[in-house]
Amino acid sequence: MSVLEQKVDPSVLTHSAAHHVLATAELIDECGYARVSDIARRLGLTRGSVSVAMKSLKTAGLVDQDDNAFFHLTDNGAESVVSLRGRHEVVQRFMIEVLGLSHDQAHREGCRLEYLIEPDTASRLSGLLKFWNDKKLALAAGEYLGGPCPSCLGLKTETCPCCGLQKPEE
Image: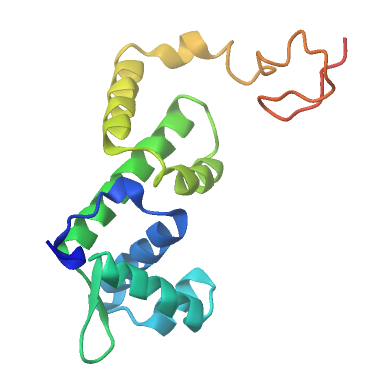
């Protein structure tokens, strides 16, 4: 089986590759095509760095390029996009609904985590969200969320190794 025929597990994409394949999908959704210059503009990168990244995505079998230099998602690329978007959504919902983070913060942090968690983890997180909402646990958890980090309590160091905050005043 050649490299192009191998199915790429979307959970092994790097952060950078995930951003490139998602930008490609967004541009195709919006414009019907995606070129190196469009992807570079979308990601705030140089055309040269995008060209290198897209070559890797082509080798991985996630995108292909036509005679007009337009990128298209392969079936594996489209599956990766669906998986990344789904994982981002569940992580973002967890951060908003359970952790009480703002939409903006949850979106930023979800972008960093979507490519790290595996689909099975996202599925379990989604199940936990359903349980959380069905049991109306947000009210019960309110007193535990937003307070000091539990790891901060009883610290002998000045900075908490868990949250990075300074030791609370005693």
